Amino acid sequence: MRRAVLLLVVLAAGCAEMRQAPRPIPTAALAPNSADSVRGAIEAMAPAFADRARALAGRPAEAAQAAAQLEFVTAAIPRDPRYAPIPEGVRRELLLARQELRDALGTDDAATPEAVVPALVAAAAALRAGDQSRAAQALSAPTFRPGGARSIVRLGELGPLPQADNASAMVQREVARLDAEGRWLGGRPVDASGNTITTFGLGGNTGVGY
Image 1 (cartoon, rainbow, N blue to C red):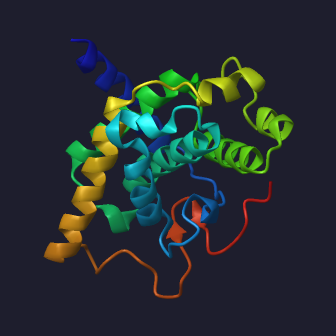
Image 2: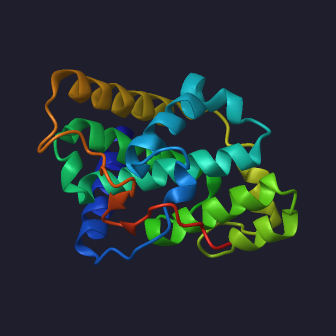
């Protein structure tokens, strides 16, 4: 019953997001070595969340990066027509995973990916640079609760994330299956120019600007 109620909540949130006009956000930092930020983020987040995200314990920078990738992928797949072949069941699992992760981190349920993704990317970059103050500023309330330095602590203590593990592995397998069977609509979704095109905007090789 609890899973059914949670699914209704996350589906309603997902529908609300799709009604909003998407704003461009920088995406290159999510998957810097990939020409397609969606595909690159999927490939990066699946191993990060493997074994119920055990490897993220005590590693807030890596946790922020993986969380940003999951937020981005969950929102981008329904918005990007290139990823239309991804089954609805996989999309629902991603929504459940995002809710699990938001609950663990204390992210506002009403926050849009356009607010959450850049903040997590900025926090990850600051933590990798050893700048705790800038990382705390990136995770400000009310988008993140309690916000600031205490949210950095929560990044390192997310606990087991079985749904994120399941959903990230599932979408990775689905992309591999579609590749193998050649079932992408209009060809494999990678722009030959080397730029990443998503409904979040043109990512290209732009920096995150933080």
